[in-house]
Length: 68
Image (cartoon, rainbow, N blue to C red):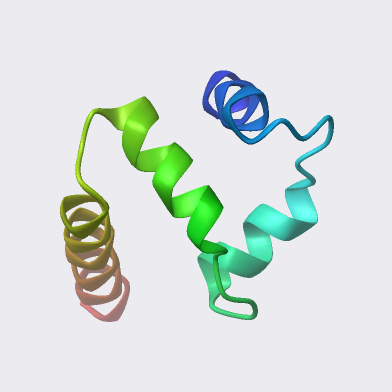
């Protein structure tokens, strides 16, 4: 995660990308800015649509395993 966050900060030109911000995005407490989605997609070599689709699929699997 640290490596990805570092690359994301570089792509965004932000010196700090707090764990709190990442947690809020992951937990749905805050919306992910479009600039972050674009940068994350570029780093992963995916389209934004594919990045979101994969993220949603992982969330469904995680919920299923948690409730099993």
